Image (cartoon, rainbow, N blue to C red; front, side):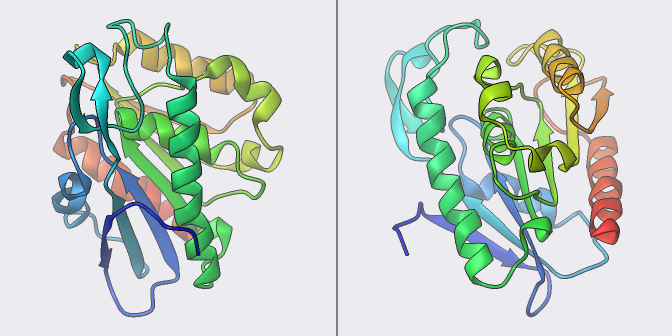
Amino acid sequence: MPTILPYITLDTAPTPGHSIIWLHGLGADGEDFVPVTEEINLPVAVRYIFPHAPEQPVTINGGYIMRSWYDIVATDIGSRQDAAGVRASQLEIEKFIAREKERGILPANIFLAGFSQGGAIALHTGLRQAERLGGILALSTYLPLAETLKEEASSASKDTPIFMAHGRSDPIVPYTLGISSEEMLLQQGYQVEWHEYAMPHSLCQEEIRDIENWLTRCLNDN
């Protein structure tokens, strides 16, 4: 098995049959969303996996080294994008997907989730899998390398459910960028459920309940 990134794991019960790989945002680490998932009650046993992004310089932060899924070179995050970094993180997350499949978890029972940068990687990676995943949670984020999706996406991914959520007063990942990403996905035939909240670049209790409800529906459908 190839070397994988360091990570935290949390099983909600013995021998889980579903896996949720949850990716943190810029400068955070895998610990960031452990408390959130402890507030989510699901109808089946789930293995949560929280990878730590690699440490690397981030241009927009003066080259400061921090955990980052890819470099951010400008405040307009949707324009000048670090394609090589995005694709490198895609390969890292695909190692986690492969390992869960080796453990006997069906692709349809594997979910990708992520916040901000992590959500961008969850979207980018999930839509390029040869087999349909259980779903993609994309929180306060956007679709990276959108111009390559039509050519690179798998036909199976068209059936992967997508939950997108955004704060209307987000100063980090603009609300308009989230909306335009959702519209692009809808235009290309993806199944997107959109939620928005009166919040900045964060999560709120209403959103956590909506995530719980959406995951429950997806888990019951599989």
